[in-house]
Every structure is written in C-alpha cells, then in structure tokens.
Length: 219
View 1 (spheres, rainbow, N blue to C red):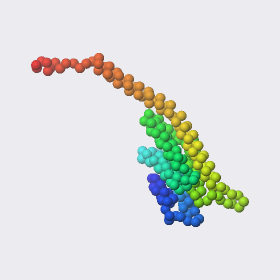
View 2: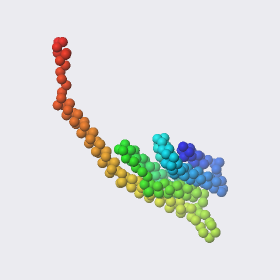
View 3: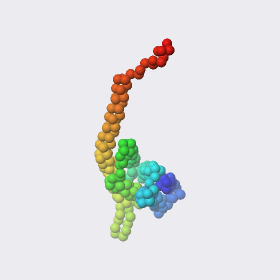
View 4: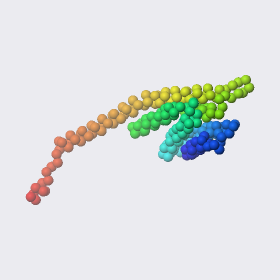
C-alpha cells in the first residue's frame, strides 16, 4: 500500500514547482522517494515469507504496486528528460510488464507458477538505477570529485540502454521457458474437453429418449 501511495507523491515532486531549486532539491527528493519505494518491494516480500503472512490481497497488490511504480516513473521521465528517455522506451518497458503478466495469468489458470528469474531480478535492479540516473541527469551532467569526474549523463544513457537490453532478454527468457509448457497443458486440456463433449453427443445419439407411455395411454 505504501508503494502505491508513493506513486502520486513521486509524480507530484517531479512536476510541482514547489521543489524547484538551484541545488537539485527536486531531483534529490524524487530519487530518494523512488529508492525508498523500490526497497519496500523486497522488504514486504521478505517479511511476508518470514512471518507466514502471504495473503490473497498481498498477492494482488504486490505486482500491481510494482507495475504502477515502474509505469509512472518511465512515463514521467519521457516528459521530464526526453533527451535520455524517448517515448518508445516507456512503451517497451510497459509492454514487457504486460507480456509477463499475461504469461503469469495463463500459467495460473493452467496450474503453474512462474517465479521471478535471476534475469527478472536483475531487470528490477537495473530499472531502479536507470530511473535515478535519468532524474539526476536532469540537473547534473557530471560530478567532480577533485581530479575525478563522474559523467552522470553517460551513466544515465548506459543504464537506460542496459535496462532496455535486460528487459528484452528477460521477457524472451520468460516466454521461451514457460510458453511451451503452458501451451502443451492448454492443448491437452482442450483435447480432454472436446473428447468429453464428443462422448456425450455419442451417448445421446445411441440412447434416444423413450416415448411418453403415460401420455399415449391417456389418449
């Protein structure tokens, strides 16, 4: 719930002039909010498993909160820093989430469970870094630490493109590893249903209803 309520606060901080400042107050505040919200994703899962508090409501709200936070972040970044995050990247990220959600729903209907893969976990970490890097890049192009210069702009570009690559690879990995299994189970179930229906039709044809003898006696 805290992650869901964080989404409008995060968007408000990025868009409101109240947080505009010469020293990057808006960027720091938005980055902090997004990092804290992302940490709760791992924290609530850990607490739920440790305390045995895995509930139906939690199973519904946890993926919903993740997708709301990710979608809101990348849609906002298209407007906030379009030089680094063009619109097609936001479409790709959100489309990937829809694809994996669709696979999970089909798998659940077939009695399977698709657990998060290592690539999926890596994608989540890279998304956090990329969102924070793009937000900070809006204010600072580089950080100077004496003779050492850290290019925030280069890091933002690299993290975004790495996130795109990991998102595509992880989505392909989900699809390849689970689609054959899901499709085989669905085909087997459809064949079983068609077989039962054909047996019912055959039985009905072989055993027609008996005439109503009571009505014929009355006539």
